Image (cartoon, rainbow, N blue to C red; front, side, top):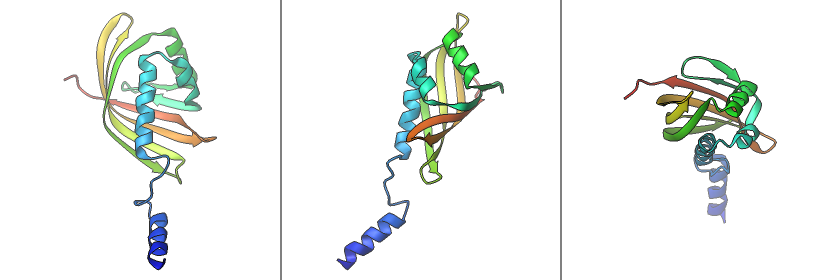
Length: 146
């Protein structure tokens, strides 16, 4: 019994031994699902999963907020055909209420009828509000074309 009590105390006290329900893998999957929503033009999902105070900075350094992003999605100025995410690293802070995700983003898209590719490193920040994760910020740094 003493051994069991010691194990439970160590397990509950040590974040490295605890399995959090909002694990790093959940955050990575959230981003995969979010990118799939862009590919499938699921604007309703993106609207739901994006915080009202969201900001994004694209690889060209242009800042946009949620209303601007949603207007662009509705106008379908750019259509994402495919996305590949690699090198994903998620970290969770604030007792499980804030997540920072970094990774590599590669896509094929069509803008104004012209197909091209984008390659970037990115950082996305999620905040848990009312029990659900919401994207609050995104930043891309463009990479040279391969």
